[in-house]
Each structure stands twice: as C-alpha cells, then as structure tokens.
Length: 229
Image (cartoon, rainbow, N blue to C red; front, side, top):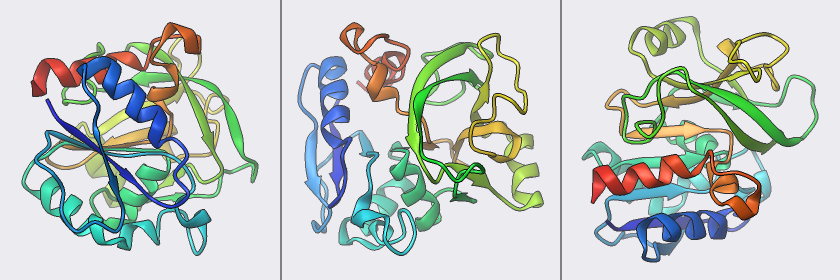
C-alpha cells in the first residue's frame, strides 16, 4: 500500500499523520507539497489538520485552491480514498468533495480535548475497522468545527448512511451536552456519495499509539492496510 500526505503552509499535523501511517503500513508515505501539480501512484491521500494559510479568508478556503488539489479531486473522482482530518475536512467542503460547511464553534472558543464518538457506520474503507455503534475516544483541536448543511443535504446524508461519526457521551448517548461545537445532528464526520472520501474533525492520528495515551485511532489506519494492500 502507498499513501500520500498533502502538506500546506500552516499544516501542523502532517508529521503526526506521517508517523501513524508509517506505523501501520511499515513504510513512509509520500509527503507532497501543495504546489505540486502531480501525485505519485498511491492508494490513499490524506489532507492533514493544521491551519493552512493561517486560516486567512476562511478555514480551508485558500488550500482548496492550491495547485495539487486539482489532482486530489481528480483522483477522488476516480475512486481513490481521500481522508481529510480537521483542517483537511474544511478543505474537502471548500472543494465540494464533501457537502456542507464548517462554521465557528457555537461557543466561539477553540476546543482542544478528548471527546467521545459514536461510530455510525462500518461500511467504508475508513470506518470498517470499527463496529457500528462502537464508542471511541479521539482528540479534537479546532475553532471551526461546527458542521452545517441545508435541510435537503442533511436528509440525504442521513438516508444514505453517510454520517460516519457523531459526538456522544461515554455511554454512546448522542445528546446536546455531548455536542461540543454545535454541529447539526452532533455530526463529527461524513462520507462522500461514493464513500471514498471521509472528512472528520477529530484527530485519529493523535491517539494511534500507547505512548500517546490510547489507540482508538489506530484501527482506522490499520484497516487501510487490510483493505488497500
């Protein structure tokens, strides 16, 4: 299996993803600068978290127009899995690869802590390492994670089983109190129509090794190896 991590100016989680992928794959992913216009032959593309272009204009808006994104979009349309984490999720909505938008957190504060997530579907290359309704602990670190979509889009996401993760409490209850940022439907991550693109605000790469305090994020990276090898 081969993977590529796209590096934008302002990315600060690209090396964390690099380490997590290398641990699972047994080889280093390609680190691709945002100004490149071509990608190597890969089975997975990751848009990491961080603050691309300093979040100027709007989170993810400028990165979405980087030269390399034309190739990322083309690969996604051909079925190559694309994972966007935090700022990567914002970039995916800005490109149109995923619907909706990530707005400022409801409390207008930056949130950095572990949260509980309910796995809504195991039917994807990203979530197949978990069981449906499994409750996992993953860190978040964002100011613009409040997911919004119009009513028709939200209805389609629900009907097509494209909501991958929801914020919940430690018992898996999806409550208003567990909704850390005001996202519609407690949504923490969604899938594309072909289920080969995932955007999520939490950071699985930050809990993928016992030395980091847990391994709930490791299942996502290990599953890539099983299905994309």
